[in-house]
Length: 100
Image 1: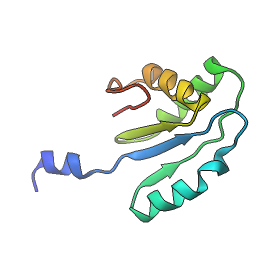
Image 2: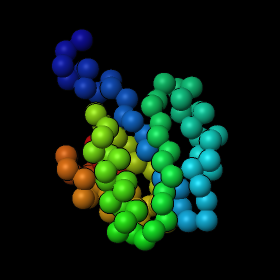
Image 3: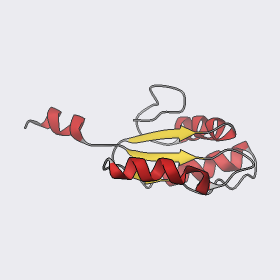
């Protein structure tokens, strides 16, 4: 296997961000299915303190993850991940709400 193959075979860490009026446990079924497929999954508690604060919190979490990241946001969580992805250092997002 060459270096290019190794890079494409690395599974991203999947970060699931819930929306308002929910909590991280709303992702439990999704987390279980993804983990069964070998993914590392993080579903942080979204503090729900406003877009700027929540995006900064999520960006700080993203900065601690090595390797590729796939962001998923539900409802308000989509706004949070879009802002977090564009403010986090590293490669630019290739799609709104997704960071490589």
